[in-house]
Structure formats: C-alpha cells, structure tokens
Image (tube, rainbow, N blue to C red):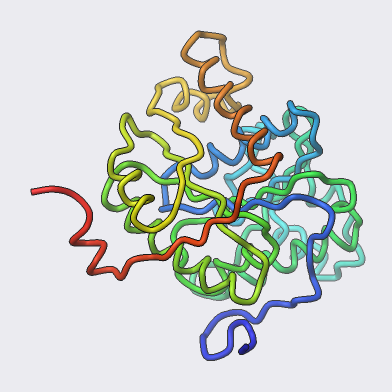
Amino acid sequence: MRADGEGSVQVHLEPQITIDNAKVFSVYGKGGIGKSTISSNLSAAFSKLGKRVLQIGCDPKHDSTFTLTKRLVPTVIDVLESVNFHVEELRIEDFVHEGYNGVMCVEAGGPPAGTGCGGYVVGQTVKLLKEHHLLEETDVVIFDVLGDVVCGGFASPLQHSDRVLIVTANDFDSIFAMNRIVAAISAKARNYDVRLSGVIANRSAGTDEIDRFNAAVGLQRLALFPDLDVIRRSRLKKCILFEMEPSAELEAVQNTYLQLAATLWAGTAPLDAKPMRDRDLFDFLGFE
C-alpha cells in the first residue's frame, strides 16, 4: 500500500495526529449547498441530546459557526499569525469559542487564495486541539468542509473522520459533485478508517434523482430538509433553527435534526458506494 499522497501534489498528512475519543463526522457537498447550515444545526441537535460538541469550520471564509457564536470568530491562522506562529503562546480561548448550548466552535481558516494548502491548516488545527487536551473532553466532532473535493488538502478532514455525510440537492450539479466526493472518500478509505454514512437532501421538494443515484451507487438518504424560508431567515438573523420563533413547520425541521443526531450517535452501517465515471453519470442523470 503506497503512502497517502504519494504520486500526487497534495499535502502529506501526519498519521500520528488522530482524534481518538470522539465520534467524528465530516460534512461535504457542492459549494453553496448549505453545509454550514446543516453542520451548525446538527451540532446544536447533538448538544440538545446532552453531547459535548466541537464544530470545526474548514473554509477560509470562516463562516461555518457564526449562527452558533453570533459573530465571525478569529481563525486558527489569524491567531497563529498574531503570535508569529509560536504555538506555545496560544491559549485555548484564543481559538476555541463557546456557542449555542455549549457547542465549542473553531474556524481553521486558510492561507490566502493561491498561496498554500487547506490541508495544512486542518492538520495544525487538530494538532493544537490535541495539545490543549480539548479533544479528550468532546463526544462529537463535526468538520464542515468547503466546496467540492479538488485536492488532497481539502480531503484532509477524512484522515480524522469516522463517517462522512454528503449534502446534496435534487439537481444535476449537486449530484455530479456528490459522485466526485464519493470517489475521494473511496480513495481515502484505502488508508484510513473513514467510511460513508449517507446523504442529506437539502433545499429540495423531491428526492427522485437523489434516490435513483443512491440506489445505483450504494448510498442511502438519512434526512430531507425542504427549502423553507425560516431556514433562510435563520441565517440572516445569525441564529440556529432552535432559536427561531416556534411554528409547526419549524418544529418538524427541528425534530428531523434531533432524529438525525440520534441516528448518527447510535451508529450507521458503513456504505461501500461505487462512484460512476463522469460520462456515465452524465448519461444517467435527468430525462429527455
């Protein structure tokens, strides 16, 4: 078995840096599909089940956790730069911020565009968390990962994860991106313990194309979140769904999040999905 990253222009990961005590989930999906909304509300749902939760945003925009913390918190890169990368000078409160119902929030950040690898930042973030013993006091870790998997660096959270959740909509572009994410996870699974948990349908009235694709490649749908205005408004109000004005519509969504958290905590069977070739998927999707 060749070393992870061998033969590619990706960051070489440090296999000795692992997360041992928590259940670790990575959330992937096409850019703009709603991964941060899903991640933050899922973190809140886990916390309402009594779990100690840590959410790690893995996007240079550092906007994964603002509905939990009500602000854009400094990134790990920001605070490292402020001490000239002397990590021994950092305190936990410099880069870990408490949000809704005790959810701990970290924004890894990233290098300036075109100047470095996001995988290095994720690795340094996990290393810092381990050195400060924060991971020893955590039940659930959620990595909220930016956009499509385009290099080994963006796939680096898979090194630390037990299960991957893919967020998709019932459309061509989202499913096309999902297929490529499945391919990336299949590659990482050869060297790491990460496995697919399932698919979350988001901003979708129906799931016919998602379900047809899932059946073809060996995936399963874990939850469906419709395109509701209350979800859009929650982002604008900078809060999670559990803080919004009660309504029957909202209660149904909140219950779906709580059920999803309970299902993931109980454990889902690993999925051995087989991605399609791009051209085969192009022919498979849609209708005349």
